[in-house]
Image 1 (tube, rainbow, N blue to C red):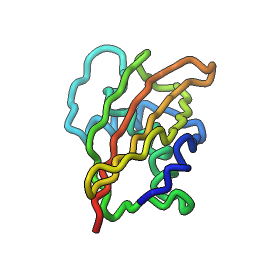
Image 2 (image 1 turned 180 degrees about the horizontal axis):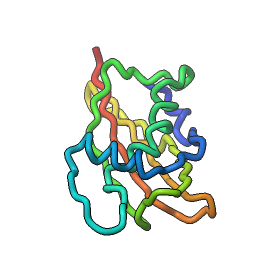
Image 3 (image 1 turned 180 degrees about the vertical axis):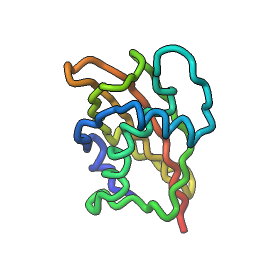
Image 4 (image 1 turned 90 degrees about the vertical axis):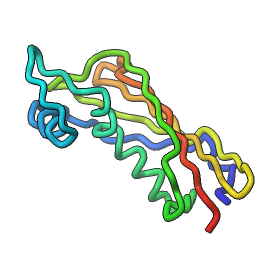
Length: 133
């Protein structure tokens, strides 16, 4: 069981430089072949600039999530603006809840992404389910 005293712990990523190539590579990887007008990152690209916040949580030895038994339960995003080449985005992740339900642990992690001018880009929330071994 993850100690609930870690609720509120936060992690910040270094600024992520969005490039045209990174958007195109991501689109190719997910099968998004559109090529129309101004290049804008698809919504799921939020995982590219936000991933390091997740990684910091998963690898935090003090929090010690049992990632070997972790299942990604659900995820949602809210977007404030489109992401385009040239953007520099930093993401803050915050552990907001640790609850037990039966033999499972439910861990909620919120994300907040902002640009270099501190304007909101996207917000998200993920629910991780950790099953007892």
